[in-house]
Length: 202
Image 1: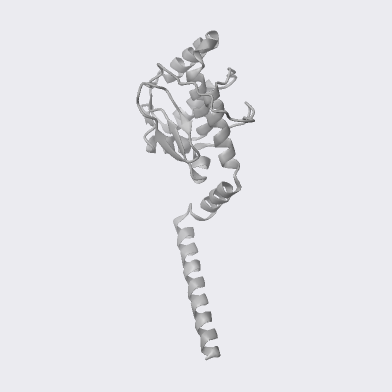
Image 2: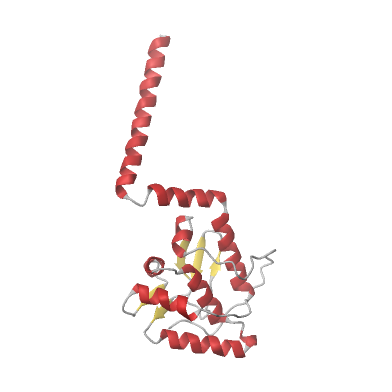
């Protein structure tokens, strides 16, 4: 994975009552439907990720066929060196939450965050799911803060309504056309009703 692992900024952001460790972040597609945009973090030598309530920034990474071995080795190394702040384990844990299927992975590819050099998107999705099985580590404050904000963003009622509306009405082009036609028909009916009322008054 060609990513700037050399430094991982630890930030205490004063977050109160963070979500429990076992709570998962919504998938990338669920967050996207709820209005979250994905961007690449500045390539300034830091392996950093952040979420400001609208944009989730993730480091640019290149996935190669040797990725699984590399990740497992580095995560095991972090388990033996707790003072390292678990940068790779934290990032991998977040990516595992975000990527459930090839669809989520493709969303991150389209956002310019991931470059895939493996045979298929599904293979990469399975890689992140596989390397995190049984993984336990001390969660650093940066991951805890980002994870908590993403979970709470997904819980907000207006974001859930937006996600349901998109999933129900905007996935299929024919459904969109039918929705627009119904809206136009409603507007024409209202206009006709108004003219009828005005004509009656006169």
